[in-house]
Length: 390
Image (cartoon, rainbow, N blue to C red; front, side, top):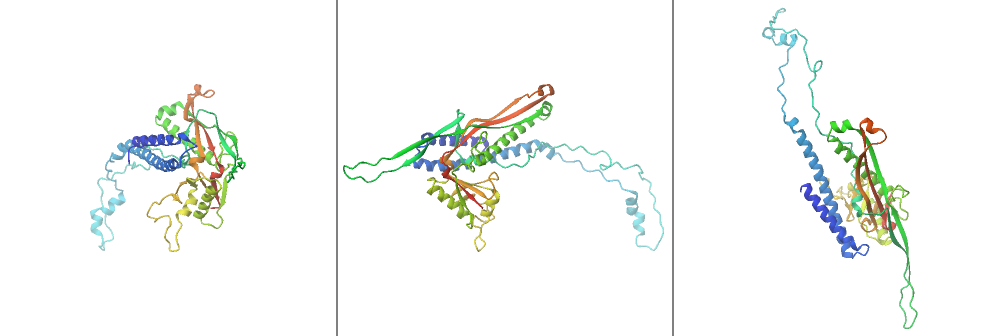
């Protein structure tokens, strides 16, 4: 695997290429659209490699810190003191009388230690130093935003124009006849930039005594922000201060699974997007339990359709990448053209601030605050479709 810094450079370069292709948006040639879709998949794969590299470096650093403790060999355990009973049974006199008819014999001990035995169970326990590794509480990995194009903005309200009337009266016309008149109308739409934030009070002593704790706190608070952001992208109500999520967007299409196999229902949702939304789906979002049912589909002969159990298998359906996350409601899948008809505008990236609240300064306390500001624009609701009843 490539080093983290090389993967970071490649990510930056590919994002720049994507940005260049989007300069002419929304008037993007069809060839560029296909290029964007391909590069988006490459970018998603590269992001996964980068995340793996970061995780591996974290494991490596943890092992380096713990190595002195791991390599130190424990001293040989001292020989255990024998009790009087053990000494009796192992004494040569006792061994010599085994199997004889004698009913009586005696054994003498010249070196019996009758002092109380001091053992680790009732005496002084040996000190055991705790290693530096911290095992965080299990959390899902935010992945939904990877499907959506995004960039920065300086606006607090993202405005765009939507064509709401398209009357096509074009027709064959006889010589000298009046030409038919078409009609177009446009409506201004907007998406508000909203804030997601979290705070954590901590004492100065805690930060001073455990230097690495500050980085741990920052990372966990940023994860909290990312988890809430992902939930907002899917199910935000659209009423400030919440984002307008995909699943609550008015006009989004619905395809009931009914008696269809899940892949069939997903394909029918894709057809609705192409036929009614006049868009081309670019991704699918599914709950892990729902994807499990797809991954385990078998033929009547018992052959797994999505690949042999010895293989990891591809997380794709009908050629589209499947984002598997518990962030989406179980029994519901979301299919859509995320590339062309959705966008994230980030007014402020994740920011970490430290300050004093009320009388914290007097108490040697401080508050760490993490926040971000962003907007989600869903340009065409009919370019998205939920599959229900999975």
